[in-house]
Image (cartoon, rainbow, N blue to C red; front, side, top):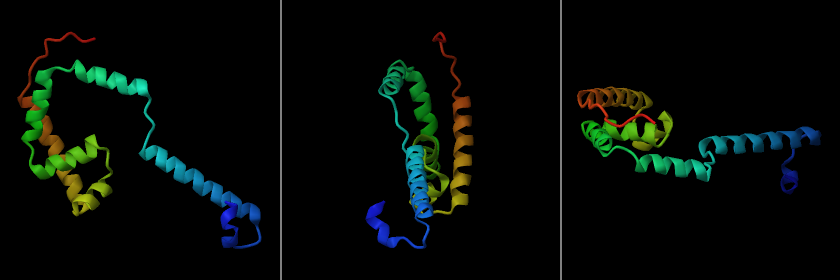
Length: 127
């Protein structure tokens, strides 16, 4: 903070320092919200859940995803699985944000219909 004291404008040193501290807090808060810290135990529980997952359920999910067009599938994966914002996906794919929203809506609807069509009753007992 003091390394850039030559860039300070105005006479109020306290306001200048407070502005810098506020900006640092906002930057750190934004970084933490985009990159949340995950506890090791949480990761282990997720891996354990995936190991016990029903292979037929995975096959159903794969089939439902394969029924989607490449454009709709990529938008769905980027937004839902990867967690990108709509604007980030629009910039990444070089398409308007409205197109991203339309493709995502269409993909969600088609995915739900595909899962409904391939309805299988699980024989596993709920835990």
